[in-house]
Length: 602
Image (cartoon, rainbow, N blue to C red):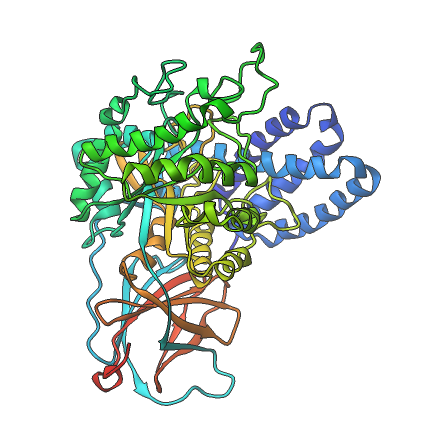
């Protein structure tokens, strides 16, 4: 469609923000990159958001110009490419923030003011209830229609999704989110009605997403109010000064309210970002100050503190148990291969293996606490390397419940990702094949660089990731921050991100992002302890996964990321139902087999 005056304003704001970012980010090289850089960014903005043919042609022209830059200045190409993606992301985030502040949600058609989502009706025998979230129709977890399963076979060449409930795989542990200090602060900044709506939206099974898992940061993380730990007293190897008083201020009240909304205790997983600074070689939880005498030392755990740090996990679990919130388990370390600007602690594959084998595993075992231990907790690209290293040592492997990972590193969404591709979905299946007796779960996901208000592509990223990871034997999916403010924070290191729910604390408004509804297409219909069943489509345009629920229903989720409507048929046990997958839609088909088909079935 033709660009409106609003589109012109959006693009102009993007141009101004990008010009500033390009000069700041590219420095002395900006003079030769700037003209093509700015024109390309504006063209991309127009092409993505306003589908303008004119600017598509301009974008194609600038591909040639960028190629010319590569040919004439190849030594700068990699640096310029990363800088371009980085500054484009900053420009879009800044523009989005400005537009929302001035004009509100009206300019973000895919974001919605929060409202309870009614439950879909349960299907009768032989029925299929269709629940859909679609980009262009405005449907959000909407019941679209009810189909009948009829005897028959698909036509030759017809797009088909086949289900076989007799072939079953992993059981579903559930879905969850991270109850960070930032999320707790944002939640507390809302009025009482907003707070209730927010918590129910995630954890209520009737009108929310029905999440049953919560992730906690042990000690501070970047989404904390500054830098702190549970044991600040330097050299306190016995942890006599250990305290979770900080958690009782904001985080634990939120956890209790979430459990109340859920109607059952949450499955709580804790992850450390950093030990107390006195346990680190560089004497800092984040990077040391420029003037620190330890600034050149790595952000690793001191060998002399390994036993004390292992004891810290046990003390943390005991303190939460005494507070009435027992932990389900720990990850060994959040992002152990990331020397980030925020809290971190680095472990090589062998260092993590040895810490588990010699310290953490024995400490947890000696405590008598029933705690699961999850390795890696970083991106998929090196998931197999880490799993192979740990599982190759039988003594270390016996302490480990399974492996967890984050989704970062997709060059379609992260500017810093290797253009060669480091998403590596197949690594998840490879780890399952390595040790099919162990477990797999996603421990952190979010979209970086600001709140991404109303961004539909983030919803499709979630749906694609959930489908592909579940099909590769993942048992749970845990998102990052439960809620963030309208700027994607607070974050004490400026690492602003998106969340499925954004709270506009200035307007006391709770906003559902497209990603919230994407989650609901799964979590509202895939029940804990559901079993993944065999599911296959005969065309790549449809991405699918399916689970058999404990209540006897089957939930099939279909993602269509294309711009075309796709007619297809669902085939199960000799019966079929014909339907359509709308362009850019996520659709859940909840069906109950006829009574004759379920006799003696699994």
